[in-house]
Image (tube, rainbow, N blue to C red; front, side, top):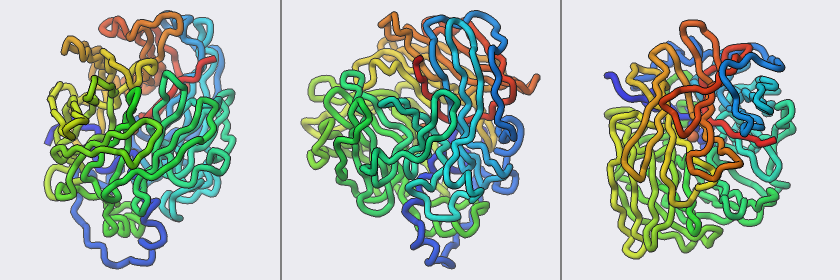
Length: 486
Ligand SMILES: [Fe+2]
């Protein structure tokens, strides 16, 4: 079946996530796994080792790169994107490779340098496979995202601690546990409150506490940690904040011990440690920003799955939350990944009801980005990659700019032979306009088998890139990026 697909391929970036909870118990409880149904994913084919999904073998660095067009001088900093790059050359899934940073430094209208470096996790250094020992703490692949906060560049593998990297040369400083204060997992999608500079984040697991909420102040000191009342162990990839609220979604992708056991015993089996369980229910929780989590108010919604929120804001008694919604996920009895749509959830916090509006169903919009200056505030624009209809793999193509105020959207399509990924919005520091900034991603051209960093003016996306920087080697498709200003 052809479908708009980013996730119709089997597992998830974060699937990684999970084994944290199955760990030792799962290993001693072997022999009961019966899950054998293969889905759209064919674990034998290993499409993630082919084409531009395949890992690169070398760490390289090059200076003063060739540029076509003009790099805006407002872009002064490091664009750095994470992804999965198995150092052994093999992995059981696209998402289970060692983290690799691909960093491009821009300054004074020039592309000063490009480097790619492994995130030197304990798994990378020992050459061990993910899942060969209980994930958690230092044991993760650090391969999903980067966060720039409190003077530190952190990679996140969703499970375990983040790893700190030097923004200068992308070398790995080491696992970072906030001075010993972080004892659980660190999400790949923390949120920085633009008013305070505080980092709000969470970690989820499959044993109690199922969900932990944390706050680090603008200097990076962990100042608050508490459990969030949750029904059980579910995959929680993202959350949202407003000026006053932290917003969680607890959805029926639940921990599956049987699948976890099989995954550990045979990583190539296609088994996953999650399953779709609509009977579990689905709900959105709104709690005061900064806590207490005990004050969280849950409102039921129809079963669905959401990897990524776009943004959220307060509107009186309502919390308005935009999401990329899948009608199901990990459903081995039906569509493995259901239909993707953009939704607006308006949470009435006085009556604990949610109005669910369909914003768009046609564009395959995922991997959302927004101006970091309006995180948690009323906003107008969201930016997405357009996923293309495909069969059993991932095809990320164009750039979508959605105008939530006017209900319109614009698309720049690079053509069928060119592929992109998450488009990171980097604001122009001298212009407070919401779309005053640039959208950055690595683009791969099937024809030339080369990669470029491309830069699009967010006010004029239909014009396409205003600058292209030739990258000295192929950049495999990856996940999330961040920007470190000079
Ligand atoms: Fe993500």
